[in-house]
Length: 548
Image (cartoon, rainbow, N blue to C red; front, top):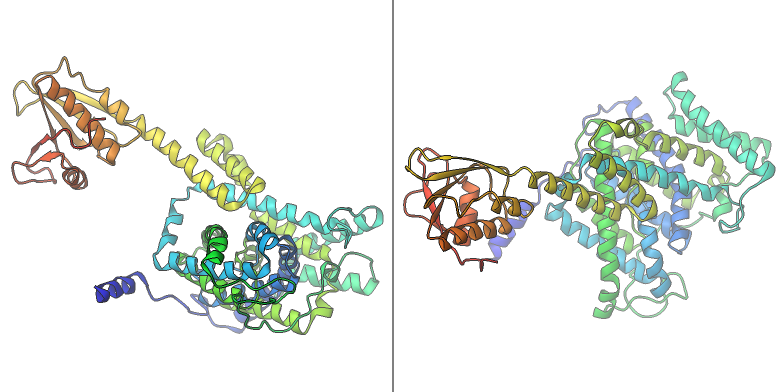
C-alpha cells in the first residue's frame, strides 16, 4: 500500500524545466538585455513592496524581503521564465485584518502554511484547472488589474507623510505631472532611437539625473520609508516571547494557532495561485511560449514557505512588473534572478542612492504598464461578441477593481459556466419516427446533452399517453452527463411503466454506458457494443434513485 502510494506520488511529479536560458541563445547581448531588464524591474519593485507593506500594516522591510525571496525562488524554479513575483496588493488587503488582530508573527506563520497549500496544489496538478478560465474572464482580469495598478499610483500624488490624506497641489503637483509625462515620453520614444537600454530604465535614469542635478523638490522613494536593512535572517515565527518586531509576540505552535491562520492561508493560497497562473498565461501569450502551471504552483509555494521563515509577507506573481520585464526584453530566468539580487543590493548597500529616485519616474513607468496591459481591443469587440461575453468582461473588470482578483475570477467563471449550461439546456430536442427493426415501436432520437439543466426539457419530449406499448430512446447524438440525467431517465421510464408500456435505451456511448451501469439502471441481457456495430437495447430499472 505504501509502495503504491509512493508510486502514485512519483507519477504526479514531473521533472521541471530549470534551464536558465530556455530557448534563447546564450550571447553577450542577451545577457546584457536580461540584466538591464532585471535592474529596471528591481527599481520598480521598491515603491510597490513598500506600499504593499504599508497596506498590510507591517514594517517596509517585511515587504522588501518578500519581494527579494519570492522573486528569487520563483525566478529559479518557476514555470514561466519572464514572470516576476513579489509582495502584492491582492494579498496585502487580506493580511491587514490578521496583522491587526494577532500581530505580524501570525502573518509569518500564515505565509508558511499558505506555501504548503500551494505546493500541495502543484503536486496534485491542480494548476491545470486554470484552463477553465474563459477568454472573456482573462480580458476582464487584465482590464481590472490595469485599473487597479493605475489607482495604486494615485497614492504617490499625496504629500509625503500625510498618509494619503493630503494631495499635492500647485507647483509640486505640476512638477510631479510634468516628470511623469517626461518619463512616459522617454519610454515611448527610446525604442525608436536605440534598444541597447530598456526604455523604462532609460526613463527612470534620465528623470532621476534631472531631478537630482537640478535639486527639484519632488517626492522621492526615501520619502515613503527608508529601505536600508541587512540580509534577511532565519526567523521561526512559532514559539513564545517577543517576535521580530516588538511588541508583536510569537505564534504558539498549537491547534488554536492553526485554526486562526488556516482560513487566511487558504484564501491567500487561492488568490496567489489564481493571480500567478493568470499572469503565467498572459506572459505566455505575449512571448509565444507555454509555461508549466504545476511547476509554478510548487515554486510559488516553496518561495512562500521560505519567506515565512525569513520575516517576509509572502507574495505571488506581479503582472505590472512582469509586463515591465517582458517589454524590456526579459525572456529568461536571468532577468528575474537579477531583479531579486539587485533589490537585495539596494537594501543592504545602495539604499541612500535608491532613496533619491523620484517617485514620478516610477509612476511614469507604471502608467506605461497600465497602457500596455489594458486590453484596448476588448472595447472594440464589445458589440461583436455575444452579449453574455461582453457582460462577463465588464463584470470581471468591475469586481476586480471593487473587490479582489480571486473573487472576480471565480464570479466570472461561475457566470460563464451558468451561461454555457443555459445555452446547452435549450439545445435538447428529439426527432420521432417509427422503428424499422421493431414494428409498431416508436423511436425518440435525442439530440443535445442530458444534464441537470436540460432534464425538464427532456422529460417534456415524451408523449407517454399517446405512445405505443414499446418505445426506444436513441442516444446516438446525445450524452448522459450527471445524476440529474439519471434521475430524468428513471422518471420517464417510471411513467411508461405506470402505463404498462416498456422503454429501452439504444446507442449508448461508452461513457454513458458506464454511468448508467454504475447507477444500476441498465438491464444488460446481451454483450454490449458501445461502438454501435450491433444495436443493443437496454431496459431501464426504476426505483434506483427514488423517482423524485
